[in-house]
Image 1 (tube, one colour):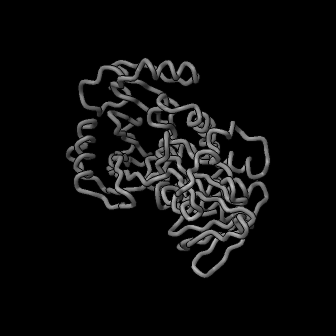
Image 2: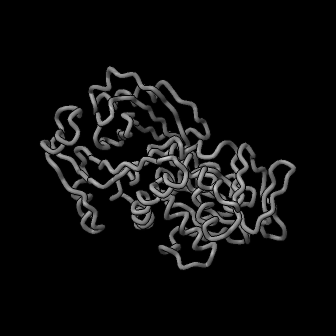
Image 3: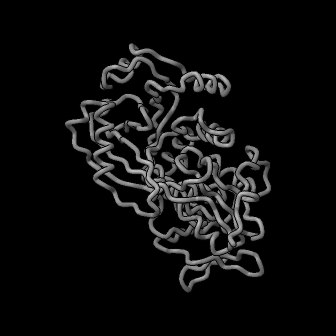
Length: 362
């Protein structure tokens, strides 16, 4: 397994639970890239905008999180803090479309008025008259999720973790992937899963294939308030506020095409603080306690690549989840395990298949 984000780790866990031995190789530390940097909303930001392949993965995953988080907490002693606090979309221009989507998907999304809005989130700026509300949308505290997942993996006898180990290239013999090279060290494997997020494209480039996955930077800021100060998640004009149980409030995020540059910028900090104050005026006088950036694995329409790489036996992909890695990971990783073990897939795998989506270079 190449890549120690939520997709790589959960893919490894699924395979371990099927009785396979797994070696996970991560160039830095497990869970410290996009999986750590995201907000952890267990829903696409605007779910009605997405295609059926995204909805299928999201629907399966959303029901998975609460019991799985409880099981992880019991097994590891680290609570991922899944918080079903609901999500309020403020003054959204797509209400009719969203409500049609909700009716078709049987989601408890409804339109609410100003009285409801300010009863639900009293600290909002004045003037909001209408919103969409879905009470069952949760968020997960993703750094804690990744810590629990790392611990759970290490409880399996068949698991080996190699951190701070950059894989340099694939080990190929007669068109079959036999493992990987990390410097001068070979690691043999019956199958190699590429789950390297925004860095995945470079691996297929060495095979003469173009994988349409690119880094998209997102910057976020963090405030500390009293526990319960923000009762629910709020989304307005593409920016969101996410409460944690201890009173921390995440606010984000930017969308920047800046290559692999992960540096934070004063421009983004100023823009995020202005948006936060416009949504929640009391934050205007509060200094953020943290500011960071992460690189999402951007892909066409946000549809991930899940399945075997044609022409290279033993090589598999699970990457390209864009803004929805944490949302889609449970279904994506279960689907990958189903395909690798010839089990009946949980959903139709065809929309995610790399075959036909990878472009030969040259």
